[in-house]
Image (cartoon, rainbow, N blue to C red; front, side):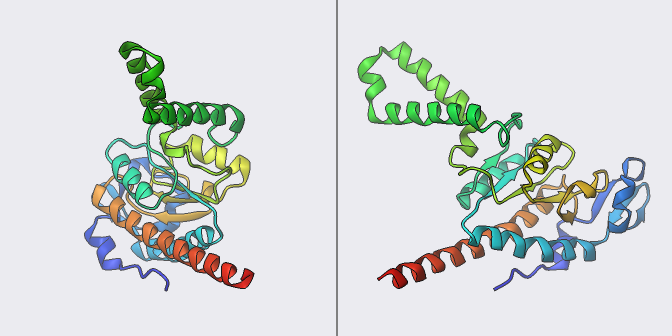
Length: 242
């Protein structure tokens, strides 16, 4: 069952509030409804159209067994991005995007392997048996540091099926890496950003916490739908094998 978007809910969440007219990107003109004082107002019918296109795509990505990499490093929205991604068992980056996360697989993979190994040894008590308290504390500090950098992507299985981005300008490096690899990009695009960089444009306010949460709720529903379809397909495959 497809996710239904409520334009009234978008309005109440403030998704239509754009940036000051002096900061606009001309390529966002088709997505702008009007001006109010010195700010642009986003056309929410375009937001609905964007969601109606992006959500089924995300559902299809997950139902095919691929992952959605959530990216949102903006200070006041990164926590809800992380919480959403974790609830969906999807990878995420909510701290600084480290160059090469997608393009330098060997180096990043080594760091993730180190992180997982240290965590395993810490949980099993192996480090505590072999080292004194000060040394174990230093290992824990290493684990915390590595988790800060790679914790959200330690279960990323190769190239993701799609990238979902909240802040196009702030996370431009993630977008550039994804485009290099041909990873489709779904993004919330505010009036100051370039929509031509994005495969699935969701015009909307990328600053309002309530608005971002609502958009994430729609995305989460689409991802869950895809996960359900994937599980159903797996069960059917098992039946056929029997």
